[in-house]
Image 1: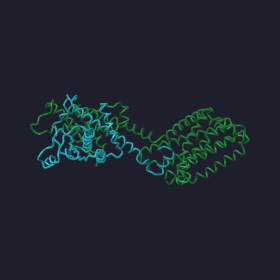
Image 2: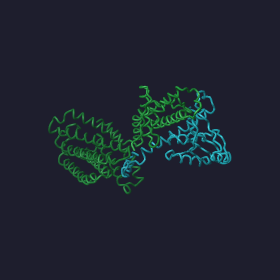
Image 3: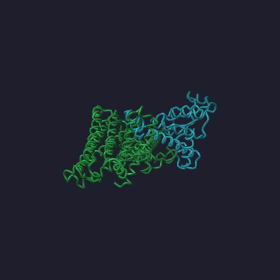
Length: 377
Length: 176
């Protein structure tokens, strides 16, 4: 990787760690909230990993200490990051299986760190400086990488499963989508580390180190990084995205309601102003508002026509109305006669949609037949 | 139209109402406190073509909102908001007395409603009354927009998670 990119990523990681540090210090999280503190240690540990992976810094460490020592530091700190993240997930998502699996995490971390240290002391410290290639150049490098990538794959799978087991219990829509994003990120991470594992085995059997697997690995890395960014976005972004997503669903409903509004406008002009029909983009931003206003307008028109059709005997028709207008208005009124008018707003909208379709149908077939709809009790 | 919208925003800015707590009763109570007037909002049996009206008390600091009773609740709330908008905008209205109201309640007199929606005539754009209706309906729609926006966000963000630990966790990660 280009040193400039390495430095930029490292800077970003430190920035996140420092931003979180202020909150950790302010709340004295090491005393009051162990999970919050664990999360901060994870961000700090990740920043350290990124620092050790910056080539000029890694080379400097290796010159001062021992050959490839920066790799041992980077692999150890990334193992700690994964452990802290996974354990905080399992503590936070409270399912019995997560609680059971939590107890295996620490021994597995200690085992991995021990194994990395042994491989380093016995073999890696005696090899020449690594040049980062998809397939390891030596058996020592292969063993070293196998240890880390298998650990990372397993922990990512455990994180994804920890979230997946809880998913059904979550009732708040935004958080549910957040958790799905975390599951996808963890799964992407697991897939990425798995491809790295296969490439590492390419040392033993050349076809496993093929360029196609290397390309796949790169794609997975980019996808995981994007998902990772997405899963860390603020809740307001998720809320807005969800609102736009709803807007897509409500657009068709709005078209049906608009047809009714248009039909009613011929017989019942609005008291003040006719709501301007929004563009698709405007509707997505304020879909519920537009549906609500259309609903009010339909009730307005329906009540007005009802008044005219059921006027007292001998009472005159409004200005401009003829017997033909009365007949046409009656057709619209028949479609709206049996709509659901109380209770849940969405039941009313569904009811209006059916009325709208019935009106369109009765107009096409020249019949005044209309069917109402009521929700099942 | 733009002026009516600006006027509405100005009126609502002075109110400083938190739309997350909106219910029609809560809103009326807030207006009573802000304006120093007692507001009576009552469903009423309206004649054909009329949906709501607002009168002010000539003797006491009282406001009377009457809205049509034989329409769905969603429409009743809208009609109340429309009439409250007239009051908030300081539009002119009929002054009635307690004596007059007592006579209405005894069935001796009728409230001065308009018949068959005079406002729905076609050549009304320059009419002073039409402009007042436009302002009131715009104000009502702006209130509705604010309520929907608040309640939508509230609904989507109310209680960050079903589990308190997860809510804390997301907060620690800086996502909330």
